[in-house]
Picture 1 (cartoon, rainbow, N blue to C red):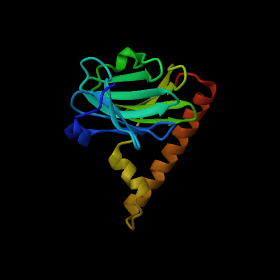
Picture 2: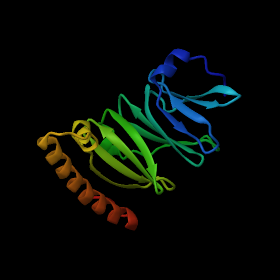
Picture 3: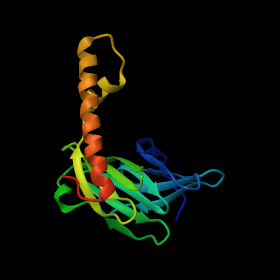
Picture 4: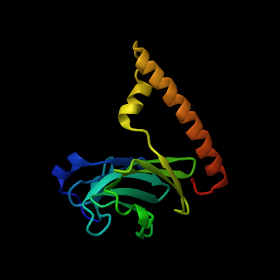
Length: 182
């Protein structure tokens, strides 16, 4: 590992926090990942995946760093202890442009693919693909989180909440059983 000198690239980073408080970030140009440790500074960990130029999102589970990549979609599980990297994105999603918005919850990795706007789910420990469901557009989600005096926005919020409850219930049933999501 070498000290990072790519300060200009850090402006385009997506970051994740490690279990010991270290901060991981990725670059848009070069597809590299760096680590920042308070008191020690930055360390360049190198390129995530050959020929991938844009790190769009990062998430960390114990010693595994998940990297969502763009230009042509890729999702990489990088074991930081053994340095082993593996692609976990199913082949049918490689035609997408990006994997972004990685989130970990309850041992499940959620990853959004663009432009299809689907959320993919993976077991965060075994990397098994569990399934997919449709993501709501950001403009639609803005209605959810914005209080408004307009009836249209209130109605949209109510409809969206009902939709989210139904989707969440359906998703949680599948996740509990670790079955692929239809």
